[in-house]
Image (cartoon, rainbow, N blue to C red; front, side, top):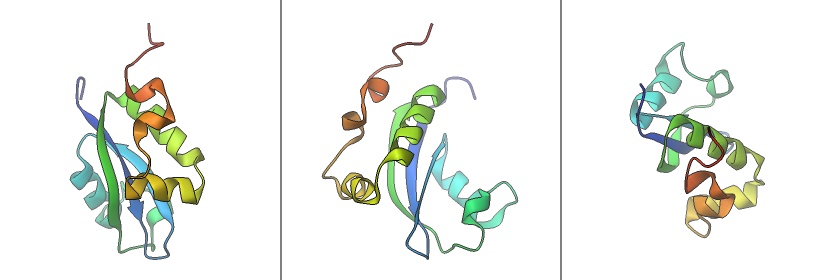
Length: 102
């Protein structure tokens, strides 16, 4: 999927935990999490899943860096992102460009 537009997303699980991931097609990926062996192991038995945040961010490299940064956030910081009190640009330059890649 070279050149695909990737999104970073956050799911809320039935146990009120959050799961952060990336996908070129978020709806398809959520379907995989819910009913496919390709879904994340963390999510097994944690359904139903609710999409609480999704934003297109660019290529896979940018999406992966933002996913990592979101995973490092505290729960209140993730909640701020979900509620719109924070945005991805506050996580650093990775969202603005693919700087640093040769």
